[in-house]
View (cartoon, rainbow, N blue to C red):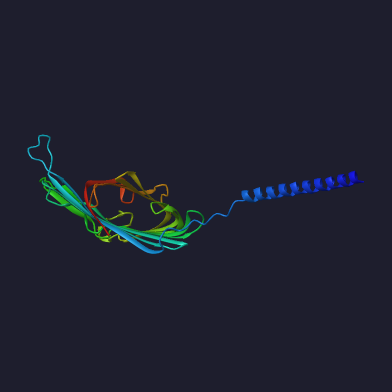
Length: 312
């Protein structure tokens, strides 16, 4: 009887121990499983200040060449370009609005020329508003306006070899206005791309310059406005090339659905700024334009000089 009781107690103890081990194993497995469950991701904090922000820079680019008894030849010249860049930004959780105003005007004078010539003359306004979609994509609307501020001239010589000039453009003639809805991809303020497949483009000119049976910047004789509809794409990429060198790339493309859509208008601008100190820099600006309504070929412009800058 004693041995039977002992055996019974031993069996009960074994069962209890086994059940306890089983329960502990189950608890341990449950804990391990819960540890492997991923915690929900913390939403990325919006670090861009909300509301309006603005910044601007005024610069003066100076260039000079002087020769005295120089055997290889050369012509004394002096030139200067005054520029203004102004950026205005608006940001909310679902909305971004970026506006940039570019103004530049430059003149050069050479010793043997009677006339002062322009090296730069432009006024440009770019504005893009976007409502946030998925990831870096926005539903967007854009407006671009660009023109010149003073008259333009063609230079030649008369039968006596004297330099003459002929006026062929005027203030705000030509002027270009483009606008339309589209989509914007914007990773950050220095890297973005906008495409607008339903863009309206208006070319405005002074009809006093139109010649008989000829078009003036694509505008027929006797008229002052040309309307087009097509696809517009623009890209902006600014990055640090070296510690004190920043490169800015601006690309605009346009194709007119109504006439020769394969002839794509191109406007590509490179600005290279090599900072010396807070106020001084060496600036290189290169721009190329292809627009067969204005000129059958590539137009190019390059300016290099010492820049004096003031930010505000």
